[in-house]
Length: 210
Image 1 (cartoon, one colour):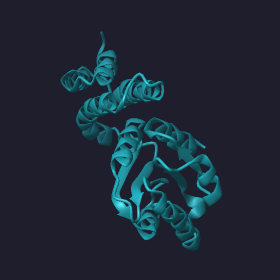
Image 2: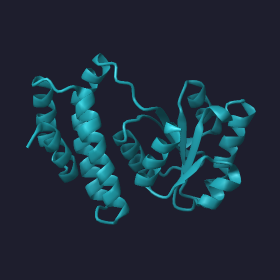
Image 3: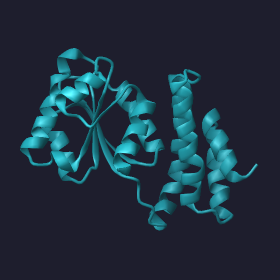
Image 4: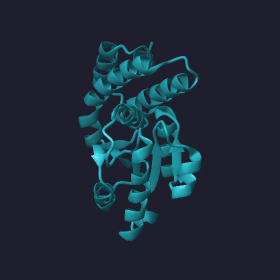
């Protein structure tokens, strides 16, 4: 098996050591970090997302795969910088004001990073103003998460704040979380709704490719 296949399989099985080793040896033998990222790691996390959507993988498998991916990415990152490989976009993620739930957001963060994007994690209880600031700092998309029906209005508040700041047209806004629906996304003028972490990652990628 080549190094790319080893990395791909290693991520699917959550074999962190195999991924690290293949990344190191692959680089030493002249493969570029961009090749390893684009032809092994990103497709592997795409497959993890597909398996998750198909209910063949659950959160634990996804987390183990993500850990293996992150370990490989840590080895590639300095080389990616040297090779001037730009991420496909910058995405700021946060759980909205008043809401302290972060498991869903963290899963989205893993899948979005696995799709080749740079993630800025704003944490939980994030005010509309903090999202506005992220857009001012050049983020291409923002992802808003809520687990409580009572905090969902903060999603609309964030979109309104972007409108007021004259930034709405500059950024893609995605929303998600247990009580959130496509209907609600349409009502508040979000660009998209992700029903789970894998769907959210695919959506960000699609929106930023437009």
